[in-house]
Image (cartoon, rainbow, N blue to C red; front, top):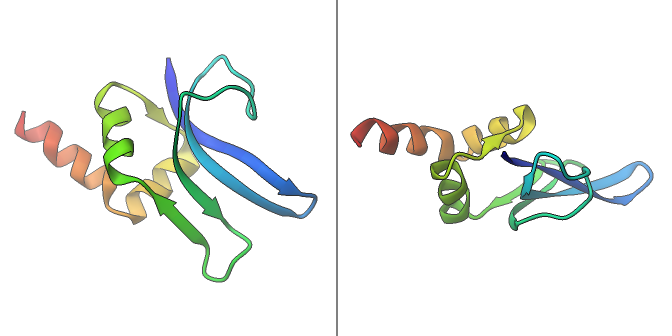
Length: 89
């Protein structure tokens, strides 16, 4: 099973994350299949950069986003676009 989740980088108390598609059995910071975007919660406002085409590709092949990633995708409108495309099929 493939998940779209966060991969932590940075130092203590200064985290930033990659949004990656990875096998669920892999470690949090382990091997990933593809980088979908970036997330830096330390910036005000938080920096989020998501490749919409890649996110939709992974959602369409059945990847499950984690709760945090689902919230980030929703704010960018990607979840709504995915639901609309799924409804039209």
